[in-house]
Image (cartoon, rainbow, N blue to C red):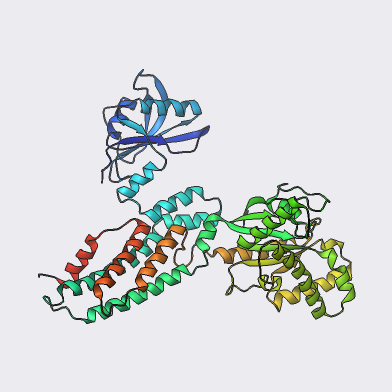
Length: 498
């Protein structure tokens, strides 16, 4: 602790104006700075808020009446001495106090993230907790807050720490057998036990990785693409979902040419909706580019909502009397939309397959939304409802009727949408903490790759090197990579040398 040699300061709260602002300093000169700017010869009691006037160290001018807190290291956020000035949040006050601190000898303005970096260096936080803190500050929805707080509290780091300790023990046992088996009479069964432990650890990591990227999706937001033919109501739907005129709505087909995005808090889950260009055959170069972008967005999204103009189904309903015939005709019509997208270079699966709720074959979810149901006659609405019930209950489709004009079916659509999004993200408070960073996933995959090379049958020296490689990748997730731990386990478990 207390390794920092430079004292830093910065505004820790948001930019004013506000009722209060918090300015923090950390480093070996904190006590001197605190005495200098308050003109007090003694420090406040640790972690006790006290009133102090703040003065300019150059002119002696009174700058503000503030609350001061003193946190002597190592019992502070950074592990070094820390002091905080809770001043009034006017811009002039903040600038005056920052200027006063800048005039103190050997006091430097902090770089972005430098306080948290010192907390990591001094062992107050591991890398997963640092990332959790960053996610907590950036959280915009309730579920993001829950996931970030859980990670910042150390649950994810503790999980990786347990795995790392298990792997350290495996490495230590293998290396002990290599180096001391003859002199210290270490039995060969220790290698078999190491292999058994390794297999259990490998299984745990694989289960952790097979999470369908729920944690990353919750952290970054669920991507939902709204697709369909021109004038189906895609832009109107987007405006309803985000409760503002985010997209232009006209009666002219092909109004939307580019992807229009809008972030929405959907029942506590972060969602990014993308309104796209209408999908149709066209020779217009600009519209064709819009269709390509629409299909690309559909391919890369977590979920696709296909909007269909329900009034276009009237001829199908009129010419078909059996539910099976209507279902076949409906899927054929949706397939026409899919083939147009295929020509634009997008998804290659049939629409009937991609709209099924089959999470075993794909992580992408899809929903069909029949818009403009208010234009259907009573008989047509009844038949369409029977078709939707058949597709939903018996065929596993996500499908419902809706009207952007009257908002009929809005509650049903939102509940269905929330249910699907919650499945994609999972419950951040249940089970083991989820992967939230691509960095974690990369190191875990590299760790597994190294572990899969270990056989522990003939060349133990090479196996030991693979194990050390796996250990390094696991340690890099939390920022702990120490060879000494392996030696500690060797001497502890086997009492080498007595």
